[in-house]
Length: 215
Ligand SMILES: Cc1cc2nc3c(=O)[nH]c(=O)nc-3n(C[C@H](O)[C@H](O)[C@H](O)COP(=O)(O)O)c2cc1C
Image 1 (cartoon, rainbow, N blue to C red):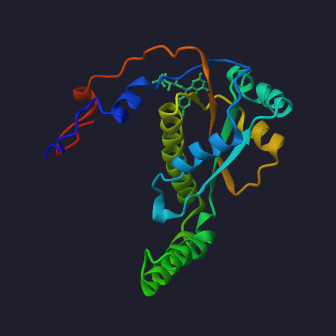
Image 2 (cartoon, rainbow, N blue to C red; image 1 turned 120 degrees about the vertical axis):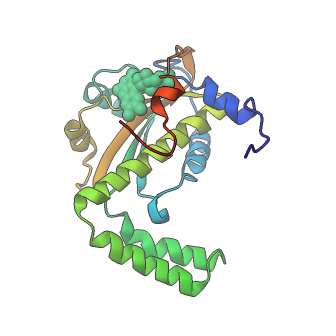
């Protein structure tokens, strides 16, 4: 059923106008407050059992950016963008289940017995999962929050580029990342100096099948 929404809503425009930008104005500063606002919108993303495994390192210090540059395959946007945000995923996010559900109970969003049951179920369910499964969940949820971050930034007139082109081991070493965190991606965030170029998409009919899947 149609929702009646027109495709050219402001949100539709944000989606269509987002392109990966690789050339940034190096003099442009985005205030910490505005970066926090973008992150606050990003973390409204959904996550498995609402465990919110995402963690972020916001890199704005030129010295730290310079150290990151060789780790990120010398991609210049890492230093020229106002910030490079590293998205991490906590493989042990279930340890926060009590904090999260108790907060939902305290806010009156969830009845106490349901909240406590959900917390127990999350704690027990996730702690008994194989590590590999929890890593996959952290990466999936990390991808969702990353996309939301990029759209939140675009809605404010900024641009981004997601980056998988970095050396995860060297990144871990640089920031002394404990093993429980997966590295999801880096995202450069800033003011475009050169617009991102349009990219093509496979036609919808080649990526969508209805009601069955034939590979
Ligand atoms: C997980 C992931 C990793 C990526 N890594 C890089 C990267 O390291 N460097 C880069 O310039 N672009 C990178 N990209 C950007 C893609 O090249 C880009 O999203 C794609 O070509 C589509 O273009 P668009 O983002 O402008 O729509 C990455 C994108 C994703 C989703």
